[in-house]
Length: 306
Image 1 (spheres, one colour):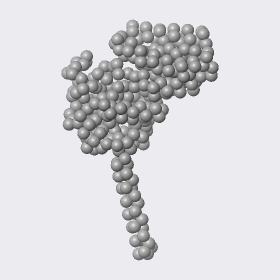
Image 2 (cartoon, one colour; image 1 turned 135 degrees about the vertical axis):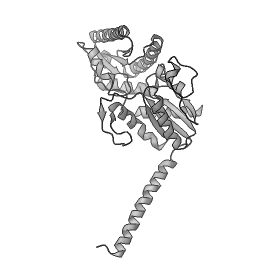
Image 3 (cartoon, helix red, strand yellow; image 1 turned 135 degrees about the horizontal axis):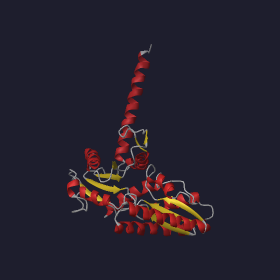
Image 4 (cartoon, helix red, strand yellow; image 1 turned 30 degrees about the horizontal axis):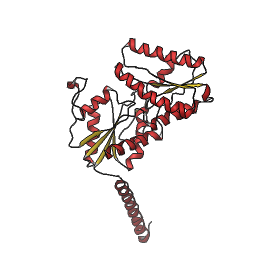
């Protein structure tokens, strides 16, 4: 049996715990740089076949790919009102994320496409949905405008950003033993359109120059898989990749690095394309890496200065 004094002290203790929780929550809220600004992270999302258990109940079970993105965004929740919309320019998931941001009172939303390249129909369609682009190659009947009173701006995708180059260098260095005898082959997904594919490769070559210089590698090559293209184009891309890896292995050691956002996608198919060849590969993607979090933060900060 509790005495009256003990019972009173217990009530006071519970009250203080509740007060502490309230203060912590409000400190976190007050630490947000600008409550009027919302951040909408746009990400492809992984296949539903690779589900994992996630600690955040609002997401439930979700693909490993998605979980890796959620983990990268989480540290920014103390700085920004931030939400994620998974999907390929999916109006439904984008609208839901925007609604969550507007419930927090944001007036301006910065859309951050966590995609490899800005040269993609997905990026074009997303800009169209947000009202930032007047037309798109996709049939406009297939795309729905979102409903929002907020002002929208949109950053670039990761393209050839230095922070991304540093991640790829880390991935290559992890597998490297003798840089002077090694050729790094960076492999991206790549779009269907030949013009856009060349723009992808141009950005990847910029990354390659950084990796070669900083890592002192013999050479750094780039290639795209073009997985969604017609069979003839896809097979041609595979042949080019195989030839690149084969030539590199004949002159030294070939190290293949996937230039992909997260695991749980096409990185597992790269060994199948390179079957029978001599190369080093561990399948590690850009995530997990702190530079993705830094890139999102910097992208938002930079565009708000404009």
